Amino acid sequence: MAGDATKALSNDVLWGGGRSPFSISYGKMMMWFFLVSDALTFSGLLVAYGFVRHSTTEAWPIGEEVFRALPFLHGDYPLIYVALMTAILIFSSVTMVLAVEAGHRMDKGGVIKWLFATVLGGAFFVGSQAWEWSHFIHGGGGYMTTPTGETYWVHNDEHDTHTPTAHASFHLVKAVPGHYLKGEEGAPHLNREESLAIWDKRVSYVDGANMTRNEYGPPQYANFFFFITGFHGFHVFSGVIINLIVLLMAVRGVFHRRGHYEMVEKAGLYWHFVDLVWVFVFTFFYLL
Amino acid sequence: MERDDIIEYSLDAHHSEEEGRKIRRKIWLVTLLLAVVTTVEVTLGAYWKDWFDMSAWNSIKWTYVVLTLVKATYIVMTFMHLGDERRNIRAIILLPYALFILYLIFIAIWESQYVHYLWKTYL
Image (cartoon, rainbow over all chains, first blue to last red; front, side, top):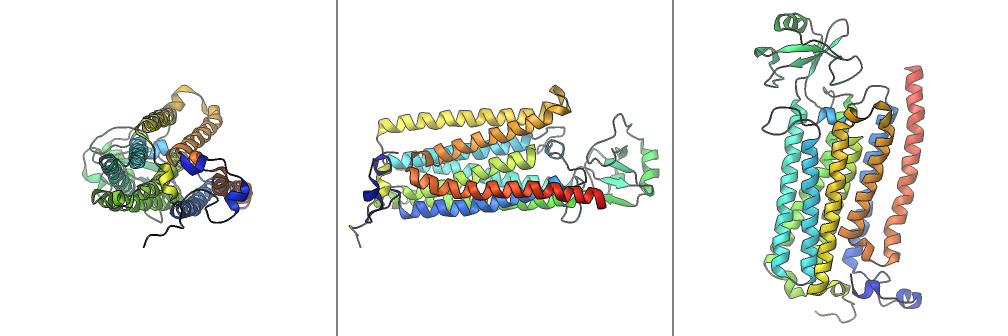
């Protein structure tokens, strides 16, 4: 960026009063201060997740084993949907920075075009998040435990967790003790009659996820999933609303009359921050 | 009411068509870099077990952390324009944050090791 921010000025001039020592406007500085405090909150959440995961003595689920579904498709796609969401959020960050660049040239049409693309990307991300939550809550089949403490994975082709035995494809697979989501190495898929006999003697059946128990791992796993992605999703949601308001103001020519598009830049800072947080959530919640 | 005692710093950010072309080129280059890094991360996450044995997990973990920090640096410095600001505002934003969080990470890892040991021993 040109202008005052790159000008060499002595400390006497910078800190002598009558000007911003940082050569930025009040609004932009306050947005940065807000983002620092928000970043501390998100870091606190991720560090708490790390603390629980590091101190637990139970098996902890792995992202690529939990998140392996795509909407409208059957089959195995480890982390593909999360990667797609990440790509969309990063791309909407790119369209945002292009909107800011257009604003610096007072190009009203460019600002509107790129801001609209940003709003679209953000809305798509929030929608994807909703689908992922729904899929996470409903689960893929669940597991049951026998009176002797063995666990079995419950399967049916319809992924029905309410009446799993109602389907012809219902069967059980013996699970690795202490390991969620995994069938024992070479464990046979039991046939329907054997499965039903074991199923009738079940002492518990855990399907999907809620705040007290889930089929993926310890209760804290789902709790952190809900809290971290929920808190981030709320940020994305409010970012979409803010961008929409700024877009409407740009369309009405408010910023053009004002002589600069700094409001786009400030909304952009928030939007990039949301993307930045997701980069860390993606790594520390889904990949590690 | 117009005030003439306020310096309009927002106007400093204006640039010409020609500078804009250079800036857009940089934006697209950074986009390409972020896309490549994300693709590498996902591919590694999905297929590392087919390529390496379990002992490689530790180095893969650290690769993730480094790649994430690379992405974060490009987002903050280029997309958020922090690299274009004065050095004093850069320091005021980054240093206190780094100080708190490095300490928090250190203390959380340290304590969690002890809690893990307690649960394993007495539970």
